[in-house]
Length: 433
Image 1 (cartoon, rainbow, N blue to C red):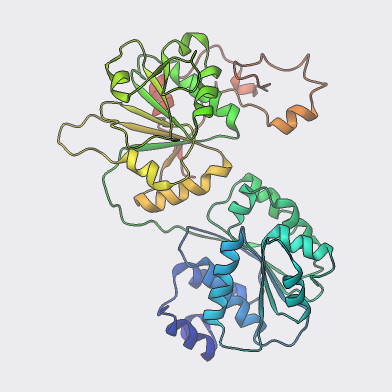
Image 2: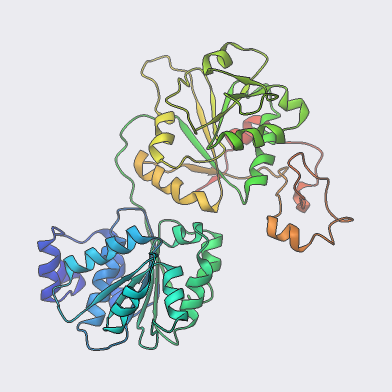
């Protein structure tokens, strides 16, 4: 099938079959022909879908043999572990001894990597910062680059390494550009816009088989932390609906920050599980919270917490997504029984958290539907924009919220009412993310 459908040469067909890849995956079927043909491509697909194998086969098909002292393919990945993984896969699939691969990643001394480049290489797999540092030392020659690949691009953006990616891309006069990512969002689009022009977009959605029955899920995609605070306050205003709710954050420090950001009238009905600060209202156990009628919202830090009995709490907010998807999924599994009360899971996610949302969707075997943001929600400005416009906001900004951020109202937000709680929690007009 590799030879018939994707026109791989005999050497590569033998390599992939010996490696145990007997049939191409969907992402490889949809992208390899484009890659081999020299087209710029953006590939959006989940973890484990075969993206890395797709571009490795494409690079090996395009380069064919090694003869240049300067590299002809530059592949940027987020970290040392990914560098070693990609180099190992090249070694697995590349049976042509004339094609040489060098990995560049942070380590105490870069001299060994400079020496390896000086000896000649065809493919460089590197972290963006190390590739840029060696390029500035004139150790990485980009004059012969034919293929520029960015893998795990969303993770690179999450690390804040956009600048070296763009600088390296702009230092190459002309080449094929390939971007592979688990999710596409605004910050990633900003990174690739300077060098990705008229690229084909290939999206492959692969969901696993559901392993357990889980609570109903909804997602709010928000621009920043402060807007998360605004939305949480807006939803919790509806005391008649949110009679009992757990709000999950990652650290105890964030729990205190969320607690202190709430308005006074809401804050009186909120507590923290094992708070850091003496003055913060808190409980020592989740059972104390369940038995308490005056407190309807409990903020829980994932940090230092083991498994929790969340039964009888009808609303579970993930203000922040945990670092491990298993932690999230463990909270979402429905208890056994015929008379289990309904529970709604409400997740807040910024661009930087969408990749984790995708991993969770893949693990639970279903999409999490995205709710429209309420029109009455105040969208907080990005911090960098606040600093840039600090001298001009005194007379034109809206009132500062309890979180201390300046806000800019949209025209549609100039209303004197809020949506009903049911509309906020289970808005009927949902869109896929």
